[in-house]
Length: 197
Image (cartoon, rainbow, N blue to C red):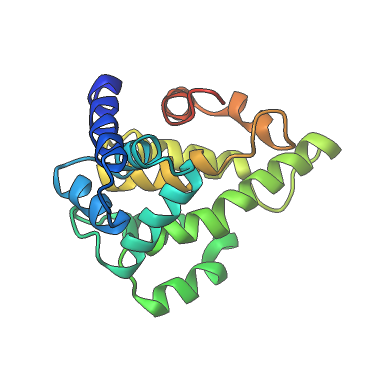
């Protein structure tokens, strides 16, 4: 991750252009930032701060660009990441199929945000409330994510950060307690992408 000061500087440049009355195409700005070598998460931070977007809106823009194939600035290992998850955790095999059929680049962002993270949070909440495990081994899935995260593959890390860590419930909401059970590397990344919880 680039230093916060560098990201703040890029965001300030965008804000100045907006203040000067420049009409900016947010998609073009996002693709320009990605072409400059910024990660998905870094681009999300710059867009949110510089253009006054919410983090969710910036993330949705980047997910749409990845899913459409417009964001081609990384070698995509996310397909294998998603397939390996479904192979190790059959719970996700059926939900994964429609994403594979559409063959969209960047499908992993949507798959993890829509199918995986909500199931992990739901299973965590169920285990907290009843003290029993659900059918989904949420701890095993989190360990799987941590193992992939530790590989240092930027494209996979971007999916984990944008579609897992950024999708956690807000602080104090049901399921937020999952943060305390994250392995060290994921826990550290959570506090980088969500410094205020």
